[in-house]
Every structure is written in structure tokens, then in C-alpha cells.
Amino acid sequence: MKPIGYWLNRTDQALTASMDALLADFGLSRLDWQVLNVVKDDPRATDTSVLTTLAAGADAAALASAVASVLAGGWVVRPRPDHLALTDDGRSRLVEVALRVDAFRELSTRGITREEYVTAVTVLERMTRNLTEPRAGSAARP
Image (tube, rainbow, N blue to C red; front, top):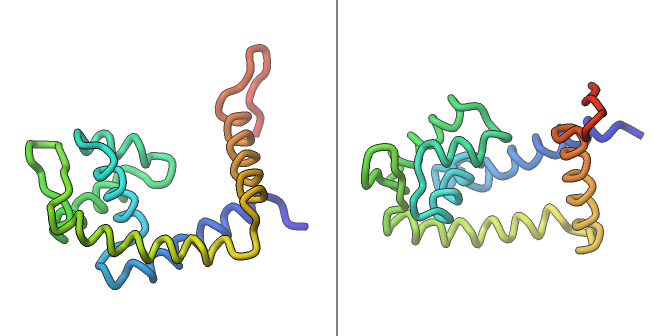
């Protein structure tokens, strides 16, 4: 059996490639879509909040590029410097994108029960916490 790190990397690569292909019709990448969701969910979204929220999945340069992409695509505007807000057009196009993403999620979890999915996410979350939040008296090890 291959170790979990192998499957985490393969899964992330497969998710990204599949999402990028799915979203190409909309002129978006997976990271662009993630930026749009941060902006949609936070009416006071800023470049900093996008960077902070998505820092675990991409570096600052990639995130800045994604922000520039959704601005150029007319999905978001800057109502004030460093602030981001969905445009009306962006909001309506995001509804269309969500329908495709829902179908993608169904495809990617085919044959996986809700309980299996919850278990997988719970285990990965616990592993992450074990490695990023060491207990008192113990040191994080590679």
C-alpha cells in the first residue's frame, strides 16, 4: 500500500486538473474559483483575507494572480482599495459554476458513503492538527 502522502498529492493533483478542466468554460481555474468563494462568503473581503484564508493551498504570488484574474474577468471589483466584492454578473455566473461544481463533487465521491467521507476528512484534519499544533512537552517531528 502506498503511504498517505502519496495519495494526498495524487488526489490534490487530480482535483486540480479536473476542476481546472471543468471551470475552463468559465475562464476560471480551481484557485480562481476558491478566491470567488472567499469573496462571496465575506462581504468585507480584502486581498489580505483572501491570502489568509487560502494560504494553505497556494503561495502569495499564485493567489495575487488569481485575484487579478477574477478582477480582469469581471467577476469582482474593488469598491475600495484592497477590498473585493462580487459584481452582479459575477454573482449570477457563480450560480452557474456552482451547478457544475456540485456535479463534480458527486462524481468525485461516487462509491463513497457519507460516513466514509466524514471519516476521511476527520482523519486528515486530526493528522494536520497533530503536525501543526504540537502538544506541550512534545516536539513536532518530520
